[in-house]
Length: 169
Ligand SMILES: [Zn+2]
Image (tube, rainbow, N blue to C red; front, side, top):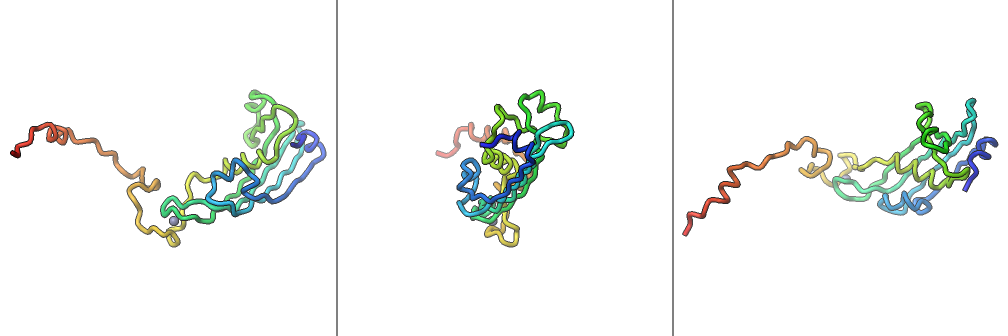
């Protein structure tokens, strides 16, 4: 746990590398333990006296291709400028370029902060490039083409057909 206010006053910069296994909430979203997460956090104060945390993450990890269901390398990078606030009202009054980091106390878990950033930056689905994907044909059930499928209403005559007594004897 880190005292965010003290870190901001001191202008603390922290950089390091984590493994997926270090991140209990992020790891279950991945297809394997392999990978690395580079993190950089910069603590500062702005002219308004706010306590700011710049969080930058860059992650290489394993995901599952949703087309062929094979494991594939995936990468994400994300950067956020967070301002420490203690209430929802404070959060709502922040300028647009700042995201709120709502704290109950003065301390916060850096790992949780990193996990939050990673989870928000993750793509909902991963896919190989079409050239490397094992499955070349696009399935009806592929999430990518789902929107293009016109919803078919059941034909009322099909139902009548089923209700008719069989003519066969
Ligand atoms: Zn694939």
